[in-house]
Image (cartoon, rainbow, N blue to C red):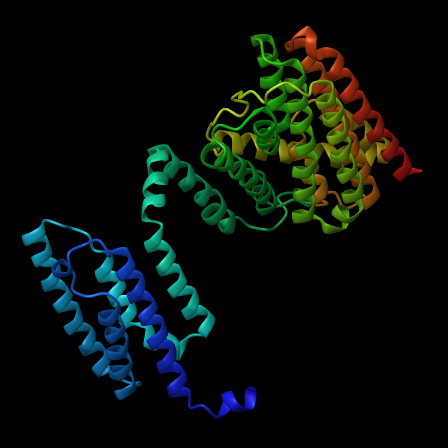
Amino acid sequence: MMEILNQIPRELINFLLVLMFSLLIGLEQRNLHIDLKFESLYGTDRTFTLIGILGFILYILAPITLVFFLAGGVVLSALLGIYYFNKIRINNQWGFTSIIIALITYCLTPLVYLQPHWMVMLIVVTVLIIVEIKETLFNFSRKIDRNEFTTLARFIIIAGIILPLLPNNPIFRGINISPFQIWLSIVAVSGISYFSYLLKKFVFPNSGIILSAILGGLYSSTATTIILAKKSKEGNNPIKVSTGIFAATGMMYIRILILAWIFNQDVAIILSPYFLAFSITSLIVIAILQIKNKSAPDDSIPVNKVQNPLEFKTALVFGLLFGLFVVLTNFVVSNYGNVGINILSMIVGITDIDPYILNLFQRAVGSININTIVIATIIASASNNFIKMIYSLILGDRAIKRNIVFGFLFLIIVSLISAFYIGR
């Protein structure tokens, strides 16, 4: 088969590709404007096919200088401009999409000759999809307020502008940490939070308790726990609220595991079976609670209030905490060894554990071995679960307390047993 294909001239293959792609775009335009008056169009399937063929002819006449191809592009643009002017004057229609698509069709030949065929196919498919999802894009744009573009701009600034400009040299002698490492941690955590934020706001805006808790846990399991605990006093189903809290906790393990794979794959390989087991344990707790309350509907509770996750103030605080934990960890390791790290991990659990764990994942402190990092991560997550249990007991309704104590103690005990097993 390949021998037969190799005998076919390249020009013939390229012409057939241009012909096929042009006809496909033209057929799409025909289908899109099927209900419009014939006189209001400059052409569809045949016209677009002929535009593609014209581009092919003018390109192969002077493929080096492209003089004929460029001249043809100028003439075609002028004719399309005349059509567009009369379209506005006569029909008062301002749509410009078909003209752009005609110019893209004209440019197919140099793409076929100069780019891999998969790239040309990708461009054609993208054009077809963008044209067909006009209504979908319109409906989606109505959901976006002005603040969304500001939020996106912040993420681009954080990840695409600030990060590449930072030096990757240690700030202080004896402490192996650089501004780049600190900001990379901010980008990673902000990226996961931003992804959760987008899912919650645009994909699952009216999600029930469990799904909202999962998305909230990807953002911050502690914040989600506090919100749900408070919601339990507003007449919401206590079993559903408890289930949501443990769903958010299960996502905490997934979030930390993702960060481990990003920053230290050696740690992630050892940590994965344990954190996946903890996530399954969370699912077991959820299943037990669900069995106790089969008939309860999944009420909609705004767990993750759709807030901007990319405030520069938050990023600055995260960076300061990261640097603080690096210095503190270095001091503890130098003076108290692995026992000191384990105690520090228990203390850190009452705060935001992400900066502390990320400083361990990046091995900013060179004297810590991988098993110690894994144990410290497990202990920190268990300590964080303990403080979430305390928050729930203080802020939540009496009806959720028994479930909360049962579920969190179960997770904490499993975590501590795992840490002991690794360290023995």
